Image 1 (spheres, rainbow over the protein chains, first blue to last red):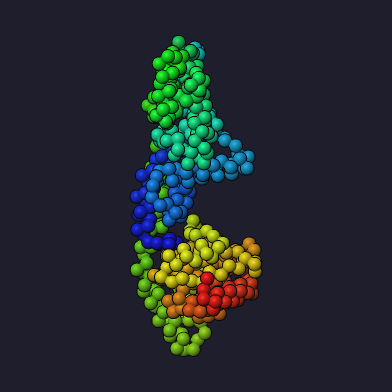
Image 2 (cartoon, rainbow over the protein chains, first blue to last red):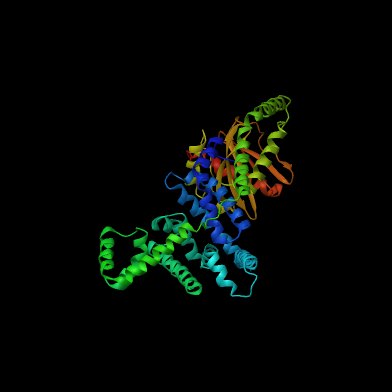
Length: 187
Length: 254
């Protein structure tokens, strides 16, 4: 039951749906698996529609992402309670992919990981980001993939700008570590 | 600015998040510090790599379709309204006929099942409550802003019925107020409209699909309570609600 008319839904679609891809990317990176990310986004969009009357213009992407982020964290909380802590579909997927690619390209017995790493740096980065603590991961995603300002990220994650800054720095430190490790390994 | 201070600001510097003067101080340091310049170059390369690595996940087509369908179904509920005019008109004619025949309950079964259906659907869906507040000073103005009338909004917390909030609902093509109360484990939907806007006889109890309905009048308003509460409890709630709403209206309204 909507307290309005079809025009309200249309207005909502015009405001929110352009940011669906940012919404999904954030949910996907926070929860690290496809099926749950889809559920989180669907739920968040419905919740956004419900609260659409409280949206008074302004940064629609930040508004939607904040709702998505909260839904994703609720999801994390539920899974923790249910004892299904981060069964990382992502990692097993990627490991299997890397394994498959390696055996296709390198039937020989030489160091598999180094070869794979050199071949597929972006898969390595992906894995490295997935392994960051979620607090750092969400800040990194919002900054690097959504190009959001520290202020916007602070609004979405509900923490001070200083915290956003230090989480982002720590996240980049860890990724830099991994990239440096690769370079050493491949040279 | 010390070397360590500059180092701690370099990420913000890359992201163009520093104040002009701070940025200038960082640049001044960078000109004289090879270590920081090298670190900055490496960091920029990393960030650049992240941007080109195509690490975003595209929205699955299935999800876009699913969300689109859900939104359209929200829309359709509203778009089919004109089709309800006939049903409502028929209901009204039957209702008037019922009165003329001296029957107590107007024969508008569509309306009663529609009330139950609306309650069930609202409770299951994401639209149970549009204004979430136990304070009638919040709920009443919100309803007034959405509707052409200002319904009574009794707060009955002291009698054990907590006001949860309200939404605007449709009965056919008529917009009505729906107040939501919590009584124990049960929710009660109270539909309110100006008397005569929708036909419904007062004080008649009725049951459909495990839900009970009862109706009352308060001032110029008709109110229908729908809940899975037991008949007796719902009638008691109705009387509490009616007493409070009438008292408030006698006092000149909240």
